[in-house]
Length: 109
Image (cartoon, rainbow, N blue to C red; front, side, top):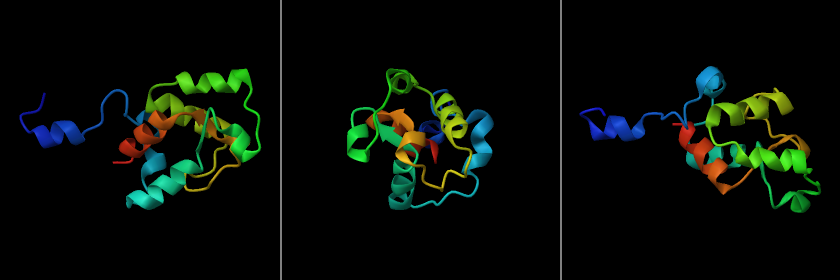
């Protein structure tokens, strides 16, 4: 652990590390409201597909078990390789949960 608690708690962990996808975050907005809207265009909640007019298959529902940022980003990019600032149609969003929205927002910093 770092001697400086602020450095320790604001650094990336193994779970929030961007890994090979770090460059995708280079030109992202920095304000929280804009980032929240951006993330809503990347992730669809596993239980709310019907609100977006999509039926989430059991295979896609399994994405919710992805726990670390790097594999989540791998899935997002595999589904649609547009910049992260471009919203995806619901059927091409990562199938996640509230934790994934929070984790991705944390990873933005």
